[in-house]
Length: 365
Image (cartoon, rainbow, N blue to C red; front, side, top):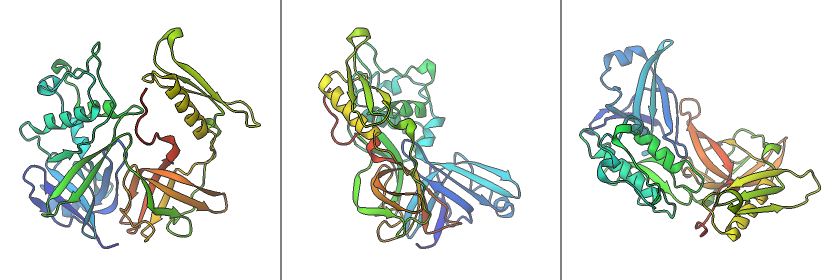
């Protein structure tokens, strides 16, 4: 990897405030359904001479390597810590936590009845950025979904007198199973300007990657310890669907595996068909019967998976051979963390079992 560079830009004018910020102890990364973060330290003498550069609400900060932007976001705080100043920043979606709907219904875009939440998310960003000094230049993917929010009986409202927080609105739209997913992304456009993007995915973000892989002895640099967790194990899944009381859709999928009967409840209140409910219960039971999980790995830059070759949400095949286990399986990248000051050619990835997620087109309930 080439030399890392951190630079600062004015949020409204786009002017470059500093092209090579001397940050040390840097850590940054993206995450699924969240803004991600960046932190680093500056010498007090340097900051005192240039205090106007890192003003929250003004400064945007980027981490770049080899001419590619690896991370971008807003500076939120610069605080004294021991003998240094600590810089804290967060990705583009963090901006919505400081914005509110004070017009009501996102200025006439709502209320919403049986609406695609992807459309509502785009409306939230459009409302935030159409107001004076509110345009961060963020673009939201044109992704569509078959998920729905709001009903005829209970439309999705945004009342001005409740001053709803726009960040909370997006969290509510993406926080449930079966909802669209997002992450923050930053890149250069062909003309050299910066693209600030909210990447939306449905039925999930990311893709199953057959072109990259992670293996101990190849590009995994620290031996992970697979976790075998009995709390998540179940040989019987009790699934409930739509309806109330005795009219609730219900099914049980169970096998005898030579061990004690272990049960788990799967609640799917939007599923109306018993056939779909049965398939989802069987899939959940099969998933819960697979023991073993690797929740974090540290990888180095390698042709098998160059740094930055994955996206948040991707599935990558992971192979672990060490003193504790021989384990392999598909894992989903849910977060990443870079520490260029300590290990410029490495990244730590947070993983989840890939079969914890529903793949393919959503089933018709």
